[in-house]
Image (cartoon, rainbow, N blue to C red; front, side):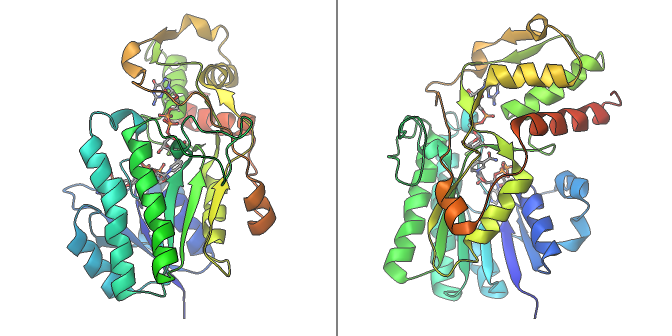
Length: 325
Ligand code: NAP
Ligand code: G4F
C-alpha cells in the first residue's frame, strides 16, 4: 500500500517542491486547494507534476471543509503549508492572517484529533516568530520568541497549539521552524524574487528601475528544494519534535541585490535601485540567522545550495522567462 500525504498550500512555493519529493518516494499525494474560479497551477506545472497530484477542496478558514477532507482521506501524513504568508501584508490584513494562520491550524488539529489520531502532522512554523530574539546572533530551538508582525504572532499561536496537541493528546505533531527559503517559483512579492524578476526585466529593457524598502535587513536564505527534505524527515522520526532549518549564514537585502545584478552581468546596481518607503514595514526584523545544529544531528539534514548558487538559479530562471541571457 502506498503511503498517502495531504499537503495544504499545494499551489504555493513549498507545496510543489514537497509534492515532487513525496511523489518520487512513491507517496499518493493529495493537495488542498481553495474554491477558485481559476486556480493557478503554474508552480506545479513548472515542476512537471500537476497531473500527479489529486486535488481536494477546502479552506483553512472553514472548519467543516477541513473536517470532511481529513475524515475522508485519513492520510498517514499532513503537511500544513497553507498560510497568508506575506509578512508585509499582515499589518493591513491582521484578522485574515490570524484566521488562516492561527485558527486554521486549530481546526486542522481538532480534525486530526477527532478523525485521524494516528496521522502525523507538520506545521510550517517560521523564523519570523523569533523577531528580535536571538542567542549570540543566531536563533535555535531554545531562542526566546519576540515576533514583530501580525504574521509572526499568528504563527506563534499555531506553533504552541501544535506543541500543545502533542503534549495534551499524545498526537504526532511537529513544527519546522524554517528560515527564509526561495526558488524560481517564489511568489513575486517576496524580496528575492522581486529582485531577480526586476533585474531580468531591466536586462530585457522592460524597465529602468527597481523600487525596494529596507536594504539593511539580513536574512538566512536557502533553497526551498533542499528544505522539503528536512520537512519530510521530521515526520519520519520515532517521536514528534520541533526543528530549526536554515543555512547558518545570513546576507543583507543589499548583498542579494549586488549578487543578482552581478549574476545578470549588469554593472553598477546603484543606478537602478530606488528606495520607496511603501516597502518598509512598521516594525522590522533586522537579522535572522539559523543555528540548524539539531536538524543536522537528529535528522541528518543539511542544506545543499549556497547563497551564490541560489541567486544564480533564480536569476537564470527569470532571464529565461524574459527570453534574455
Ligand atoms: P506561499 O507560496 O505563500 O503558499 C501558501 C499557500 O497557502 C498558497 O498556495 C495559498 O493558496 C494557500 N492558502 C492561503 N490561504 C489559504 C486558505 N485560507 N485556505 C487554504 N489555503 C490557503 O508560501 P510558501 O513560501 O510556500 O510557504 C509555505 C508555508 O511555510 C507557509 O505556511 C509559510 O508561512 C511558511 N514558511 C515559509 C517560509 C519561506 O521562506 N518560504 C519560511 C518559513 C515558513 P492560493 O495559492 O490559493 O493563494
Ligand atoms: O522577502 P520578504 O518579504 O520575506 P520575510 O518578511 O523575511 O518573510 C518570509 O520569510 C519568513 C521566514 O523568516 C516566512 F515565514 C514568511 O512567510 C516569508 O516567506 O522580506 C525580506 C526582507 C524584509 O526585511 C523586508 O523588509 O526584505 C526586506 N525588503 C526590502 N525591500 C523587502 C523589500 N521585502 C519585500 N517583500 N519587498 C521589498 O520591496
